[in-house]
Image (cartoon, rainbow, N blue to C red):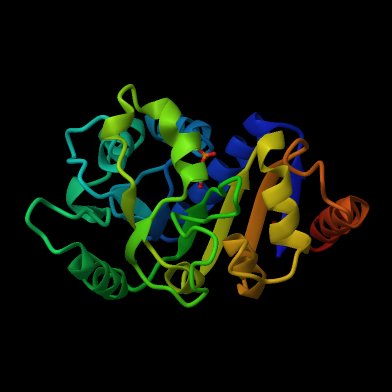
Amino acid sequence: MDIVILRDSAAVAAEGARRVRTLLHKKRDAVLGLATGGTPLAMYRRLVADYEQGRVSFAKAITFNLDEYVGLGADDPQSYRYYMNRELFDKTDILHSNTHLPVCADGDDPDSVGPVYEAAIRAAGGIDLQILGIGRNGHIGFNEPTSSLRSRTRVKTLTRETLESNSRYFDDPARQPKIAITMGIATIQEAAAVLLLATGEAKAEAVQQMIEGPVSAMWPATALQLHEKATVLIDDAAASRLQQRDYYDWISEQRRALESQYGGG
Ligand code: PGA
């Protein structure tokens, strides 16, 4: 796991956006795995600004989002489709037909959505870079604690803790869905690279478990310890409980020295 500790959330957003840009410069038709929630917002805003300044194009990109609520349509402001349209898709040159979320349309069997979504990811050639946030309980996507580490895209019931932390987005609690469809942990593991963003003190325990704890379904993000190319971008507050912080800073210093001598980065 590559651990990058930055000063604050603005630096995390800037570095996340830089990595997405770099990928799109190398591969215009990259397949991006995208996340919603509060954490990636600032990164999306930077990418929109980059697009407006002609620094990046999404014209050939394909996207697959991690998750979507069951029962909220694209025109519902709380749906993740609406969020993605508002924050990124409507503000860049991405083709809407190239953007995907695991939507369970009215009348669909929720259990049928996952296999179809997995097949679409495969047909696109797999995900090049999966963006992730992390829940306070260590979830990635909506893979709540006790999710199988081999899970696939499927229906998942949200924990009370997750419902509570997302309740700020819903004026009427009765309208907050309790069920979502999420990529599974095995789906996320298959991305060629993953980039997890975490900021703020509230994430410090989950970040510590993810990086330094034992691999366990109780902290689903620990599965990333088994990923060959996982990068974690965190700010000082999210890093505040790490026990080996000195070592991570030391690694970053050595990497910078290596890059200045041999190039790369
Ligand atoms: P947040 O959510 O970015 O809104 O904190 C992250 C998550 O629950 O995965």
